[in-house]
Image (cartoon, rainbow, N blue to C red; front, side, top):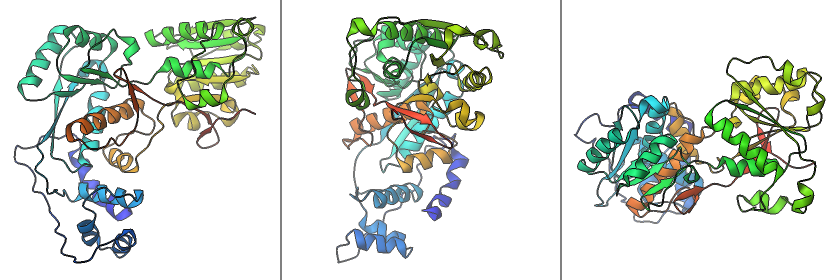
Length: 421
């Protein structure tokens, strides 16, 4: 495996260039001249003896053995192997409002490229950059995309931009890795939404909360929305437990009227410049033994949890959604600061080949949820265009990807499954 990964290093040189030339790279074809069949043991023996091409001559289709199939996919990508099929070129466009989405203009492109180079189909991946998410800019870009023969589009947009596409109602297949369907008003069968459901994550986390609930949020639109939702859900919880297997198996509600009794919520909104939480935490009798819900980016979250310890708040637990499922949490905080923390995560299915390929392109699909949901979208389009099975079995309900939710605890060196004591 290590030898093969070293061979992938030259790919990083071309990480940003997906249409270098109209002349396609030559394909390598391996002909099987072996008169005997080769089972899994036989193919493993070829690999153990570094007879990679003998292995590949027999591994001409998906293998049941997961490890052998990973080697097949990696080798197919490394050696640019062709298949004996006459299928046409797979075409996917990326619509990128680069001024709005910043680094994700390149990382989502890398994510889509990383997925496609691990497949045996020829493909064209083309980026269309737009200055803004205005209806006019989007309309012009969509017309050009259609003229160029693309029908499937990955669009990492903000909510405003996604709603503008909804209003245009294009007859093109558009996937939004950054938008959940509940955030826009869409009935189009052509638009698919891939963002995780932070409401569902919040609802699941709140089942671990006790009163008083102290909510720390930033002043962003998302932070304010989550604070409102979490306060309302805590005081008047829904009975919908369909969001994850965990909630079905582990959660038991008291009667609704009983559950609402004596529920107190305190909300604090932190500006970017705030670094000292003494006015909120020191000798504040209102927050003793409460649950803290943190809706801030990772750096601010590290500051909050460390000061909970500094001011001896004695929190029952600390809760957070996907925003703080980040390895930085493990390195920038002490274990004593995070020992009672619970983090919701929807990045629950991993593919080693795609993880390694993304890593070589400077990409992360293990912790970065936008890169992960982009991968889900490209896999979904790839399955539609080729008829092959999806690599990721994420359910789709009414054009929205529905992810399982797991609750994790940031332990000493990694995130581990949360279990009640």
